[in-house]
Length: 199
Image (cartoon, rainbow, N blue to C red):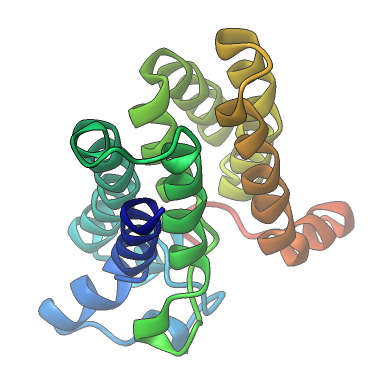
């Protein structure tokens, strides 16, 4: 039990590192909380016009989700962790990104981190969801619409690939949190006021 809780706590701390904030500080950009949507994520960082910063944010936030889950998969058995540890780690690193202890609990919306989590759990599903996101993002130029579509399909795909597993069930709260964090975007989409990518 102690080993499982240690992995979960470590995952939350890893998730709490906001690459939007870190990258912005390193490159001398404004705090991402202070402009645009106020969201510390790649799409908002892109509003500075610095594509490198946005790319680093995207990769960093995705990598931390992948790393936390991979670490639990790789080292967990050596420490005799419980079977539910990896799904719990997936949820913990995601919650860490949304509510980071290092940044006054003001985190991002979780799209990149969720993608990293899925990549560690089932990379074919991550690839399929990336294609869905890319098609919609390019076609409509609205990041939130693409993200919401991928989020809706994520649990469906995981249940299809893993059956009635704890891993698949874990995708439901992650998807629900993704929708919750995009609630303002959903309202703006319905009102036709959602800003396109890069604006």
